[in-house]
Amino acid sequence: MPLTDPIGDLITRMRNAQHGGRSDCRAQWSKIKQAICDLMKQQGYLETVTVEGEEAKKELVVTFRTDRPALLLKRISTPGGRKYVGSGDIRSHLHGSSMAILSTSTGLVTHKEARLKNIGGEILCTVS
Image (cartoon, rainbow, N blue to C red; front, side, top):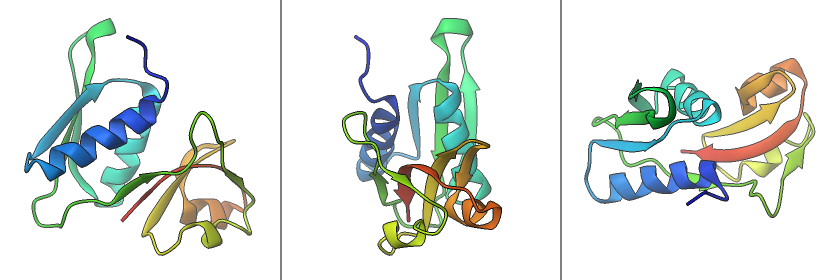
């Protein structure tokens, strides 16, 4: 069955895995999901991000850090309601979250990188 919102599915799987006390999470692989998880790993929110399987059966395996509390993940832009911001408006949309992930013309970046590059884009999700 095809997914309407694959990014939302990844975020929900991660939230559910942490709520259930699991140390890792599995989801179907895609380039954008891997890019989101790689950004979260670079920023220190995840322990490891690996890809298992071959071709059409690839899976993304995310391992959570045990020395941090559970992540607070929130999907902002959805397929039915996209949320775009300019470079000057990024901070006002965070609402106290630690990091926002944006899809920009230069690829996926954190809100801080977008402000430094002076570019806006679509806010995919927030992480804290």
